[in-house]
Image 1: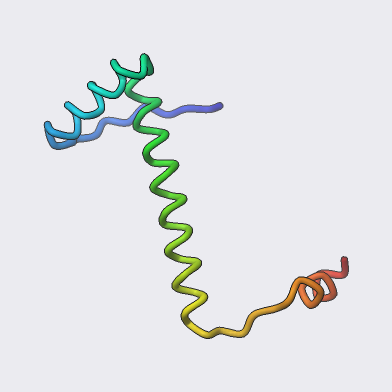
Image 2 (image 1 turned 60 degrees about the horizontal axis):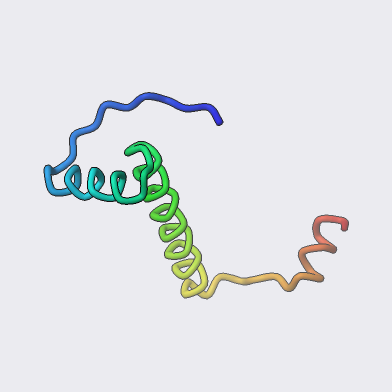
Length: 71
């Protein structure tokens, strides 16, 4: 996996939580942060899907989608 180095500023309380979990789980802080962001982005994806569902925009059935895509 390709990585990038970030320089971020966090509240001390979050840094304390990250340090505590990293020590407890015997994982690097970067892994804890990356995992938390992955989970948060999954949450945002869900919220966006719910928003789209509530917008009453037209939807396609699976068969309609396959036909439209030529599958």
